[in-house]
Length: 344
Image 1: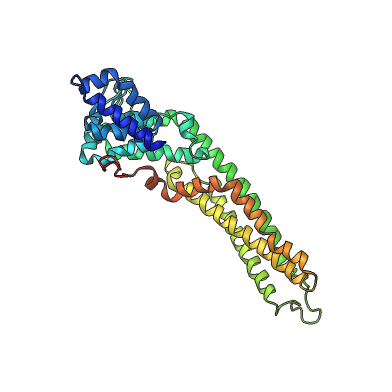
Image 2: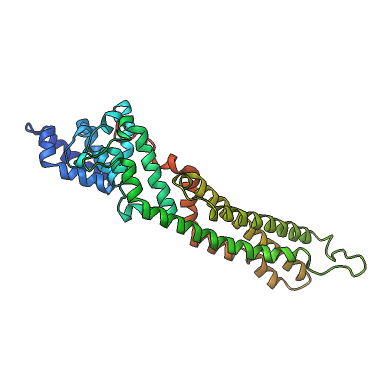
């Protein structure tokens, strides 16, 4: 169906540009809204088909919207905006154009997008990071003189960004602190459980020597190692989340420091949970080693249930956090070499 739709658009577009009266002025007058709507909703396939047949569409400018890239920037459609990286050094010329009220690209990057575009990532802190990445990327593209340039309302791009993102920054700080507090509570509970477990080992100790009864058993080794791992990583997790709570929460912190600390804290927390579950399983194997195989099978499957639930309920958040922490800029802004590649 998608291939058929592409063929239909391609045929209709060729019919249109085949008209003797067709020109960029004609396109701007009669079909401007069509292109603007495609850029607004991120319909990059539609725009690619049109631009391949008529490359001058890249340079179409009107006073209200600017170019297609200005529209894509305003509505945070990175798939459309990434086409700008495929026109080489000419992207600097595109970035020099203005939209209404004398706004350059950096002014548009400073405005807060609609909630549906913000909510494509989880959490206000990660949304704030995404907005900062957009602003920084546009700073690299526009001429240096545009950074401190004012629009018709006398506002610089930085003024607009700080004012429009003030509430988002506060929400990001609150979201990060609430998340860190909740996770630190879980880490503290794990540390509270696994610390005494190291000294009250399964089977008890020999009354004369004080040596654990199951010291020579392989499952005892598994129990002790996993309990130690759970203790070390739960303690580390507490320290990481504590560093999040004591952060200054500046704009720079939202870019890398906070997402990476959160990713590290969640990783150490997950490892401590896994260690605790393995220690529980090993202890049960020691206790039930002489019993029937029925409880053994249940015990062996027990760690899979909480870990499975953890993955099912939180995999989306985990993906957003780790992508934001380590791969955000790479995923957000990159050339896909689609614009001038031959259509299949």
